[in-house]
Length: 158
Image 1 (cartoon, helix red, strand yellow):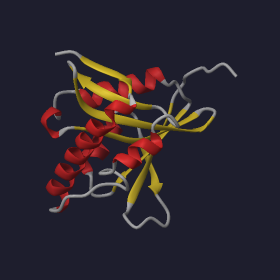
Image 2 (spheres, rainbow, N blue to C red):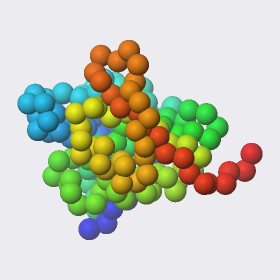
Image 3 (cartoon, helix red, strand yellow):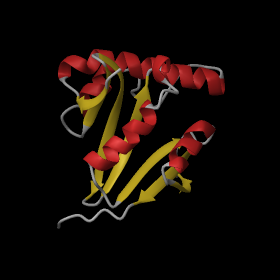
Image 4 (cartoon, rainbow, N blue to C red):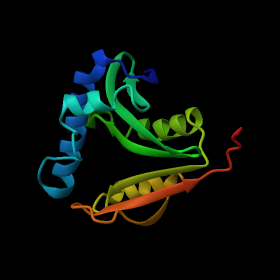
């Protein structure tokens, strides 16, 4: 099987939304007992708002879209992993690990950050495996989220 990461096209947004819904509903059913996800996870309009404004990648296995990645450039040397999802049928196959490795090489940055629910222990272990460190909690958020950060020794040209 061939795994690729490519910029998303507008034609991909329905499939990306479908994989996002499947991913987050599955995750939340397993961890909280009910479906759901972050704001806009189930909305094509949400996907469309991000499309073209920030790096938005589709994850392809052979020719099928199996997930997506949305990145947010914060400052010149700071990138935020805004959202990453993988369809449940493709979990535990190393796709997430390859995705993190890919984005960190494709978008070199001195600092990476992300937010993840406090109850998502498998996410905590996953990100910590890649050198992310829990730095605190997102203030004034209706759902408790941890903030994770990673600094790198990437040398960027100013």
